[in-house]
Length: 343
Length: 191
Image 1 (tube, rainbow over the protein chains, first blue to last red):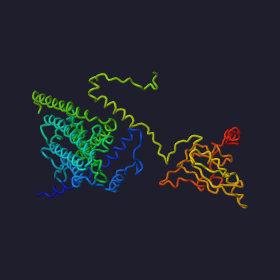
Image 2 (cartoon, chains in turn blue, orange):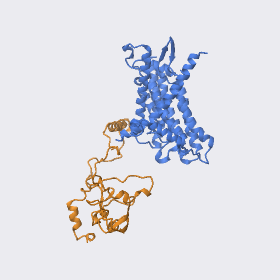
Image 3 (tube, each protein chain N blue to C red):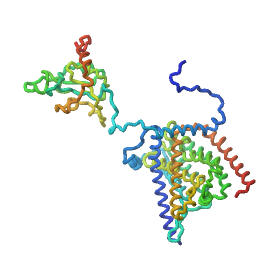
Image 4 (cartoon, rainbow over the protein chains, first blue to last red):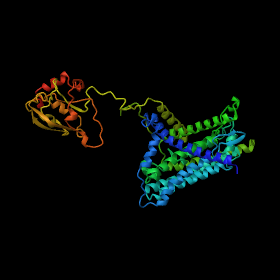
């Protein structure tokens, strides 16, 4: 047993967990600020300097709220729902390579919790289980609005997972690997996958919006018609878990997009500066997080720009638009590589 | 029909062009608009620190004036209560006892004078009806409260302080024209 590695991995795991929660926490703050700025308002600015303590106050509020479990609800599933949503959202971060390797005392420490050789599939599996969190919670509430929201969420996620998976197939054709670490290493320099798979990126991005239940695809929540959708009956920290899971998902989605299409922790021109390997790794991680924050901003930007889709529009876009497009993308990629045999 | 603004657009349900159909240029256009708003000057006025400029004749919280010698002007005639369309004013009249001449200007005064700030519509009719120049609306804002009871303002809040420096300035509302208007006997309440 390699104790150093075990301790390192454990510490790194907790660090990532902490960072994930912190980013999700401040995403709520960022979301409100972005929304406010786009609507010519100031946003939260009373709790602490620039309102920076607002997420803490919100969290405290969530804890202090009365915890209500409806009498007719299925008690166990009602509690299980948000737990699954939160757990799966956190589990996805395991395979993401947060940086290259750091060398301390001749030993190499990878900045990744687990380099699975089927990394992408693992992400998909976790995202798929995440649907159960919403479905179980919505069904167990024994409320028609919650059920509507849950059904919508399930059908939406299944529809968009297809297109998402197929856009990834085209990506895998270009990279020849399912391991996220491998994919990032291949994008060294400026060989980012966005330049090889622009259409695939667009499809993936749209599907990521749908998968995270963000506007303009936030039909499962749909405050105006479903009173909050699947979390209508939820209160206190169980509601907090659902909302928090959404922000964690947003963070992880941004990380996955940055990893798959925007070179992960790779920086352009990093080889030309001539810095030591460790500093390059740290700079790369910072750059990776900048990319992630950029995508989180994009998520919010889109949310506060576009109105919500109608349900038939959503299904039309998914089945008649994105899926044929992603099949075409696979074909085009396949034919291109068949004739050029690049990889 | 003449258009009310120059921003109106003719709507039609013609078939969408390819550019419109793929929707993405429209999204980018929308995003550029929201981004432009992102850097715009904010419309918010951070209230307790910054205050918005009031109109010269703003009608806010009432004040019961004292005269130059610090005596209450109100004689509890009840004209303000009669004029009040919201029936927000109530008062109890009392007789001035010997030795109280420094407190009240005339022989009769209001021992209780209450305005229900939740009923008041800040129309200024009380001020217009007052023959003694006693009640005025000022540019002060009625403070918010958690319960209903504190909104019934008594004399402790309404009467201005004795100290000459703390007197409430109503010169903006007590102009020459206003005084002239009050002396015009053609109006029923001035008779």
